[in-house]
Length: 102
Image 1 (cartoon, rainbow, N blue to C red):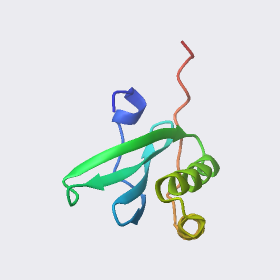
Image 2: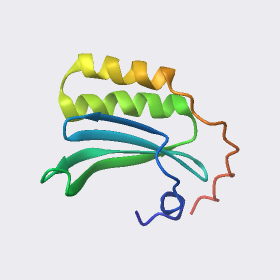
Image 3: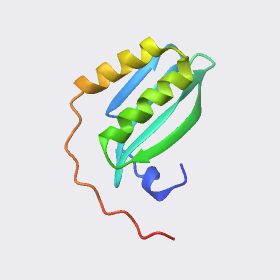
């Protein structure tokens, strides 16, 4: 993770897994980092399918739904992931200001 914002991550605060597929949410300085992908070779390799940083949990919730659907192709698993997300006690955050645009 080469981006300065994303390289300063804490451990995951929310993880959804289904067999070899995963979505993780981690707090970062400017919001929430969501990473999704799959495990291969019995968990020895992690393949990152995508990552994105959001300022608020509503953006994270939408990306969670999209990532789970992309990874599994199964809408019922999306509903399950969103239910877990809704019940999860996310810690309060004081976000750093966004850097100036380039």
